[in-house]
Amino acid sequence: MWIIATVSGCYVFNKTPANSCIQRYCPHQDKNGISFSYYLISIKINNIKKNHMTFLLPDLGYEYDALEPWFDARTMEVHHTKHHAAYLRNFNNAIEEYGLGDKTLSEIFADVSKYPETVRNNGGGFFNHALFWKILTPGANKMEDKNLADAIAKYFCTLDEMKKEFTEIALSQFGSGWAWLIRKNDGQLLVFSTPNQDNPIMDISLIQGKPLLCIDVWEHAYYLKFQNNRAKYIEAFWNLVNWKQVAELYNKP
Ligand SMILES: [Fe+2]
Image (cartoon, rainbow, N blue to C red; front, top):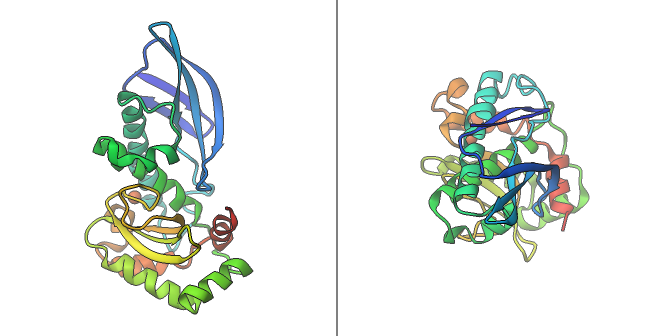
């Protein structure tokens, strides 16, 4: 068993890389605009030193009860410390097992179809939740960014129309998955959904682009407070969107 204590918690890994030592702690900005932290571990195999990344659970950036009354504290805590943490643990194990420790998250997603499903499912679960925490904020702010407003006007006419389409997509995703607002490479804004823990950065996604906004529509995200009423959960979500963060993601190349 391998235990790492960090400022945000203590993480336990089942497998320990042989002949390894922690080299340094690395805050990292993924090219998709999400900040991750990881330990860079130096592993010596047959006298060849390899670097291996072990991702860490990101903080929410707010307290578990900060999104009340829209999202309840218990759901947020279980979602973060159980579900997200489990995806992270399994992803780090998969990285080690399949020798992907020298690749960035974006590189893994770009070729995810080549790897076993555990990489796709747990890597997606790790990334998607990290983005979800980031685009939520207590006491939502207004969408005031001119560039993003112009793009929404161009592709959806109004912000309300974009929210309506996004809501319909999130409601109609059969079973577990995610709804997304993305910016395609040609600049087009689009809403669509993906099943399970897939995301629009993965090569297996039918539509690809940079995620700007997302909602988790797995029942674990809302069942404690809303039971099976996904519509009420999505309605609550709109009170928590961090539009400043969405605009920041949009404005980054
Ligand atoms: Fe989730």
